Amino acid sequence: MFDFLKRKKREAAEPVESPRREDAAHEPDIAADVELAEQDLAREALAAAPEDEAPAPRGTANAGTATAGTAAQAEEPANRGGIGGFFKRLRAKLNSGDSFLTRDITEFLPGRKIDAELLDDLEMRLLTADVGVEATEEILEDLRKRVARREVDDRDALLAALNRGMTSILAPVARPLEVDRSRKPYVVLVVGVNGSGKTTSIGKLARRYVDEGLKVMLAAGDTFRAAAVEQLQAWGERNRVPVIAQAPGADPAAVAFDALQAAKARGVDLLLVDTAGRLQNQGHLMEELRKVKRVLAKVDATAPHEVLLVLDASQGQNALNQAQVFHAALGVTGLVLTKLDGTAKGGIVLAIAKKHGIPLRFIGIGEDATDFERFEAQQFVDALLGAGPAERDAA
Image 1 (tube, one colour):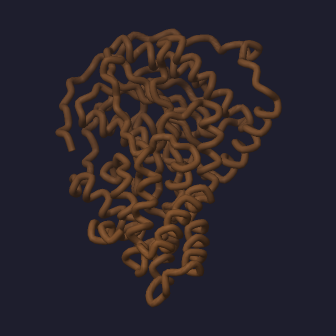
Image 2 (spheres, helix red, strand yellow):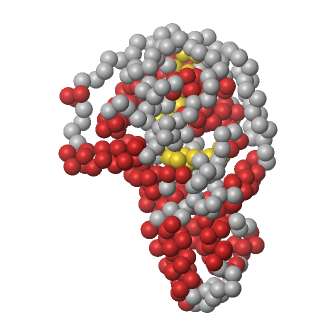
Image 3 (tube, rainbow, N blue to C red):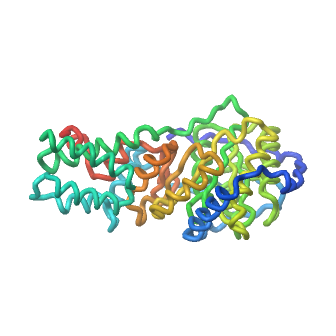
């Protein structure tokens, strides 16, 4: 972990005039059948998502101003072994869950012959662990070929081959988020339904990049959810980064516009833009997010540079549907998968990777700042299967 960069207090920027709302008549035309299908999927995804639980704010700020924390930074847990320690904790938390994939697999393996019947049983267990049809078919096709060639004849060999098959699916999407410092600011539009851990993930991202020496700013664009602005301001105070905010119910596109203008004026390296996950009229969520994206592009034609979708892993196949909806509407360029410490089976990571191929930037396993880390394919599969180098080498 990089040492935290101590920063001097920065003076607040001059207020930036917000853009007027765009006339809906100028919105891009979309085929009616595609729009209706998208809205149906969005409603299903949103209906299943609980509201975010906001941490108690540590201070308040006047709406429409950029605020920087003045209270002492909250004491965070000590680094618990870096990325290696993170995946050890992931393995422990997955093992403690009732729906843990490896427990299902290993309980039916001892004493059984590795044959077609066992592979059929394994296939069903993968499907019930949210691995998805496409990923399961690819994994089982490889295993059946290996069994036919008598390369897999015991439990360890089977688990090792399973490990290799899963890793081959996840390796192509294990691409970290690289902030291009030549772009000032590098704009990340963070999207996702309420309850996915979106705002909390923004706070943890801010902490990570401040620690790496970047000048970070947050934009409180989720103006529709109660206490969402206060929640982001609490994270801003905790990380000592400025937050651009307006009054509850304000135009999210106006907030994004103000924030990008302010970030440019202050020489900010990274701007993280929070967005609504649920509007009063849910059917217009995707249209509102598209509008935010267009307004950002009016200030900087290359912005946003990343559209980061936060998904709750415990939502299973519903998370897969959310990825489909957001990607179709916004062109998602990266994913954050949260709540892998809860009831998540873990297999949904494979399903999303196989179906969408979107880079998986980060995963989260808890509330602490140290419970958030860059995604590593091999270490994730080892944690998922409870395997290590010895088991992998058996294949």
